[in-house]
Structures are given as C-alpha cells and as structure tokens.
Image (cartoon, rainbow, N blue to C red; front, side, top):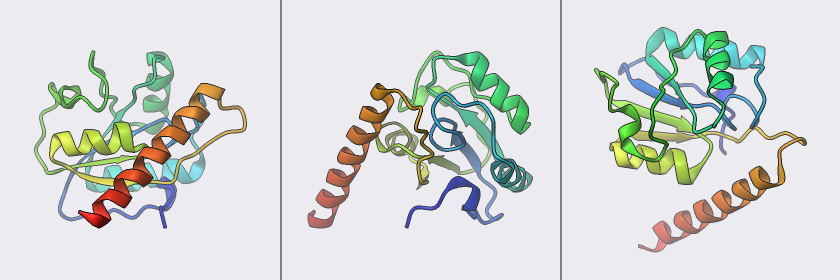
Length: 153
C-alpha cells in the first residue's frame, strides 16, 4: 500500500538529502495550504535529514509560499524534473532520497540521480483541472505498465 506523505516514516539514519515534491505530494495541485499533519511530518523529516522542496509548477510564488510555510528551502532551477540538473547547484552531503507521487517526473528523476525513491499516495482535489487529471491517469498507466514489465524481466 502506498502511504500518504503525512503517514510516511523515514528512518533517521542514515542521514539523507531528501528532494521532496510539492504538488500531489504535500498539497493538491494548485493548493497552497499545508495540513497540520503534513507540517508535523515535514518538521520530523527536517529534524533528521537535509530536506529540499522541488516543484515543476510554473508558479514560483506559490512554491515559495509553501516553502516559507514549511520552513524548508526551495530548489529553484531553470531545469525541471526529471532532469538531474535540477540539483546542479545543491551541495549534496548525504545519499539522496526523492519523495513524490508521480512516476514520470519524481521516480524517473530519482533514477537519473541514482537515488532511492519513495512513492506516496497522490493528494487530489475535486477542483483539479482536466489536464491535471489526465496527467495523473497517464502517469498511473505508465507506472502500472513499468511495474508489470519489471515483473517479467
């Protein structure tokens, strides 16, 4: 079963550099308010690891507001996940762990970084745009196909 981010338990050791997706992982696409459970989980994670928020969202002000609310740094780059150059300016001191909800951006990003990946249950909203919903359906279909192919390889 895929956990929600707020229910995720990441062991404190070894210390990690965690790249944490925003949309669908911490909040529904387009939302800005973090739940109290998510804020608590972020605090616990940041107490044991170096945590950075990362989003492909085209609204940098929204991402900055979420980073400010969470108290976590935001990775800002001209590149977008899954391009590994997203972290080119980051001084990585520990093994990398990527946490996100999407296969085609977050998990592929982790693979390109040669990092571990934890997929979390996607947070959705009844107000998600049609394009966002279609993106989720496509991502889930590709994930299911990739998972099925790995079983038979």
